[in-house]
Length: 548
Image (tube, rainbow, N blue to C red; front, side, top):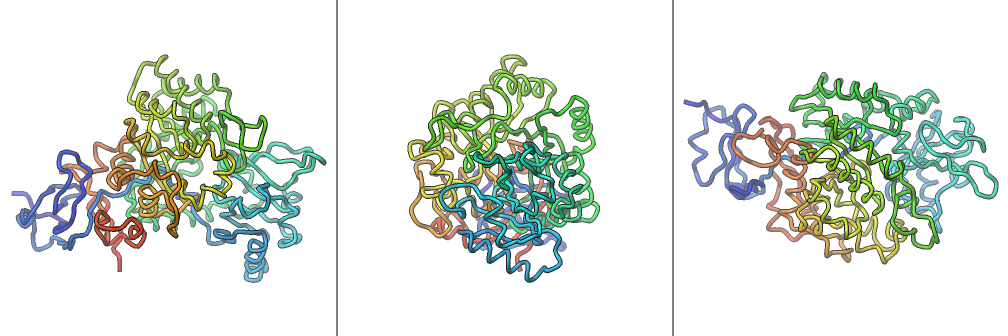
């Protein structure tokens, strides 16, 4: 006779995300696996004196959230000036000044979550904008999406950036077109500054933000948030081989309570020897709790500073439509070679031309190599041409999307994203419903710390396309149902990462990752989703978070 279950949750609305049995009332767990999904009182036969029995009281029980794009290693840094919500330059200055009052001995001023809209006139910031608040102390300010960095004059001097400097290991130097002098604004920071060479260069320059201990502090704080928010599997999408030691340390110190998949960053110029190292790292880390393997690539950058690749020029421009990091033919050959070697690719693509370039490359790879279950991902899918919507399903490409990014208080009318592409292209913005109806696999995620980590925020935005304060929806023809959104955060993301055979649904035999919420979301007005919370997070049958 089998021994009793370790954990039973009963009297719940069990949303299984299993099409064979979509709804149940109880789930039982033994030895880290789901052993029972049923109704009524059947669970009692599995209860013993040591079984933890949780009365769900009609609340919603779902599979553990799989956040398919979450920068836990990058995270949010408590040592930085926090600029989230600062809407103009005076407010940025006030926050920097207050931080300096609290940290008078700081060698560097470091800040995060700068919003492009804080600079008037739609222009990008300059060193002269920062200098009045920072004086002779070097300052590094990261944008909210961490794709750009903003330096003051002292930092330009400290880092040796002059009129002769164009490319750095950690960014591309923007120049004043009239004088040729560096403006203090760096693009391509996510591509360069977060790379192995970029981090090493920042550390060598004495930038505290890049110190391994600071990185580890950000990682562990983010991992604690993940457990609190019911994220039982985290996909960390961009890491160098140097960064794997941080995850190994977290495992050794008991700080990694969620599962983690680490993708390795493949910048342009990655060598065959480095690819061999990537493959070796993937062979070393194959466990259910920590796995290494996918490759992260970029085809374009981001819309707000006009560095995403568009099919037509940016609004208000005659010819500028952004650039791809590779010529289309070169990228197609690269992806084909990676595909032939068995790698899965996560490709950052936000502009419609960037996305088309990736889809064309996947089509080329399938033509050359033959179809295989590669599950390559286009990550972000922010501005998608309607002609390319059906190609995701046709090519087996996963749409890894972040619902919160399409919120009108981030990207909508009056914001830099919407103004950059122009109203004529708003219908292309985050077409989640169109992709789902065309048969594409949606994998939802937070993109922390670009946006809030809480999956409930993503669920709310996916079903409403409204801001967190409510208001009018933006492009609400592309909302999805709550069931579709939950699938995107569970089975869809599990499938996207080759985990659907063991995670993503509450199915007997699968690993016991589950989340009990404080409410039954299906009975709520969508606005009330934001007031719900995670009561219980379970990974491998072990409770890793319990609301007080």
